Image (cartoon, rainbow, N blue to C red; front, side, top):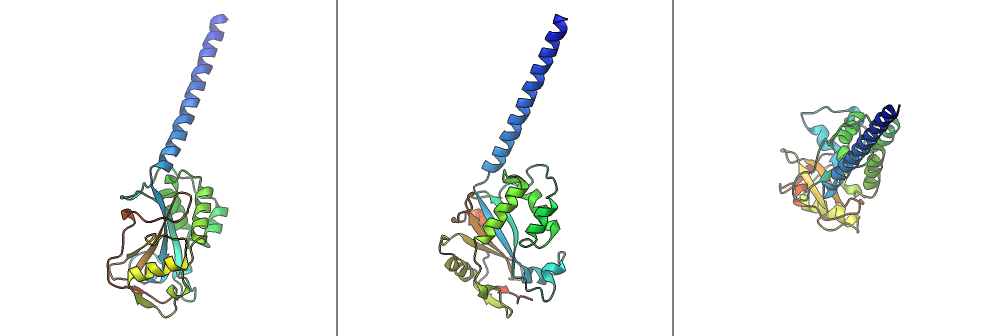
Length: 221
């Protein structure tokens, strides 16, 4: 009887040790994911120029005539200071439908919401609900000048476009906004660099830059 109780005690002890070890590894993994990037990049896609591209699936909620969609959230990406940040940092359970419905006011399609969580959100160290709460907070903190979402379209130097956004957001450092463009010189994205607490900061070299003299913004439809 004594030997049996001793064996049971040993088994219980081993199970406890294994559980603690698994929890420690899980906590360490989450900490590693959160600490392995330098800052966030809020990426805003310019819908009219995306919809004008020949390739890619065009959802009518973003590209349909009469929708009047300008800038939409593409994602909130963990970034390295000089390199692209981590991606696909682990298994990703589907984002809840309540969160998806709330995020459709920011990100145009369900598939993009699920993709952004899997590709980038899992590397933030946050739960999906907290990650998308951060996406909303980041987007709500940025003012896009109305003239950049025009029904007549325009051509503008990337530096001038960036300067307009910085001017509309007085707390933003001068180098906190970057642009990317398509090969046909249409605007692809506006990229806004944020600290992990979502306060604005200067971008690292990993944020990239559109190098053409002028970028075209198609009219908002």
